[in-house]
Image (cartoon, rainbow, N blue to C red; front, side):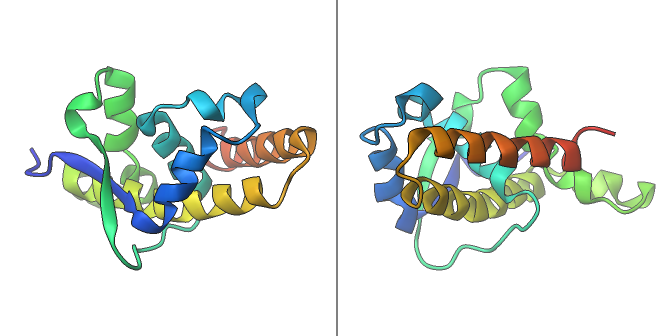
Length: 144
């Protein structure tokens, strides 16, 4: 059980998150993502290099918004993948540790997404780069 009621993200990305809905990348659907979905995307982009918050943070969504078992499970096992042996598994099943790690991954991921979106005005190239990065993440972290 955890005492927290929300997931946080770096305040410095607040304007970027808001701007995504205004950005002309509608074929990707980024303009229609919920805060939870955007957070999951940012976590995926930051899995390989989680970083601590620098500066202020802000609530992104409430934990009660994790309505599906799928969403709850994704956030509850983020840190589990870093366990080096079976002795660490119980420690890494701690919800608070997993939420902290998900926030750290998202901190990196929001930065990567912001850089990717802002440096690619060509939507087709942006789509290709995003899918290539997501495919790399998948093969690195999921596919055995």
